[in-house]
Each structure stands twice: as C-alpha cells, then as structure tokens.
Length: 263
Image 1: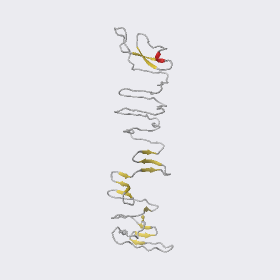
Image 2: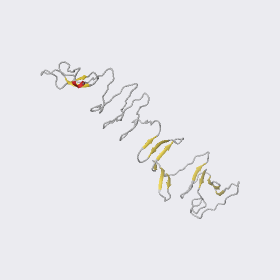
Image 3: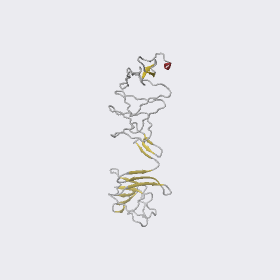
Image 4: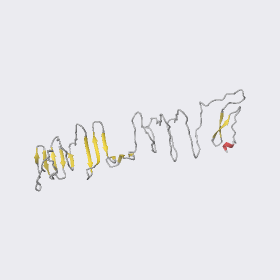
C-alpha cells in the first residue's frame, strides 16, 4: 500500500489520479468525524490525500508533496531502466538529483552528506574536500589505500598484530610535520628500505640515535695498498656528546677526542 499526499489535488494540473490528461478532479470535503473513501478501484481519496492499495504504475509524471508507505511495510520505487529523484527551484532548474541505475548510483548536488542516527555527519563530500567524521577510518582492502597526492592526518596505525607499511613504488616517500614525526613500534622493529639512498635530515636540530648498540653490518672494510695507506676510505668517529663525523682512515685510528668538529 502506498499513500500519496499531493499539495492540492483539486487544482488544474492537467492530470487525473489515473495518470491520464483531463479536467481536474473535484473532491468534496467530508463532515466532522466522517471518513471519505471515494475513488476508483484500488485508488481511494481520504482526508490525508490519496491512498493506493497494492502495486501502482504511473505512465505520466506524478506531482506530490509527500509519498509514504504504511507503517508495517517499506516503500519500493522500481524501474526497468533507472530511478531518478530530482529537486528543482522556482525557475525549474535542477538543484539536486539522485539517480539509481543498473551499474551506478549517481548524486548531483553541491554537497553530499551521510549522517548517523543522532545527526552527526559521518561522510561529507563537496567540490573542495572529503570529510570522514568517524573516530576511526578502517581500510580493509588487501592492497591497502592508494593516495595520488598528499595526506594529512594526526595518526596512522595498523590493527593489533598487523604490520604497517608506507610504500611509494615509483617515487619518493616524504613525511613532514612542524613539531616532529614520531615513529613507534611497541612490539617489533622498524625498517626503512629504499632502492637508492635513505636520508635522515634535521634542518634545525640534531639526529639522536638512542640505543645500546649501533651496527653497520655492510660497511666496507679497508685494505692496505702498496702506497702505504687506505684508498678513499674514512673512519666514523664519535664525539663525547654523540655527534658523528668522518675522518680519513689511517693505519691506526684517526679519531680525536678533542677534535675541532666536536667543539
């Protein structure tokens, strides 16, 4: 059953309840307490508007202020091609449109928004940005999330007992923050892999490696040449404050505790 509530059915709209063009339908107003049940077949005219029992088919456009179903049933809009719902202004221009087709659902509007039951915006889209209002955005696809441009977020983390991977297959990966970038692995290790160079740079400050052991397993070991010294090799030296610097390698260590580099 479907209930229709036209604004005023008695106006000269050129449409009758059957969808055929003709004169307007005159409806008499019932007296107090009287329920009006007139119409044709499954179509009844009541105090609230028009009432249709069963399935209904309209061959011409239907103009109504409100369309609703019974309390105990859902409202079904069905078409062999697509179902289109449009909103127009006083000049007849389309201000919003929802089109449900066989392969795609299309929304034409200045803004598209999905709200929760309490009215909280969950998903908002306009010409400038896309806003996700939930506390957590979860991406469950096996290939992860693909971003063609920059991403701004206060936190990126994986599910418990899952690895977090930030990857750029063909370009570079850059992480910037005005107050620092914090990378933490509470129960595992952190790996930075690159086909070329891995650069850790601080423009105004220092690079601190706070750990018990620093290992360079693939560091090239020098060999003694007939000229009496290593060729093109350097020694990594550590200042008392932890600062690192390079010194030309020799037979013995060339690191100096009181080097001018450490001052």
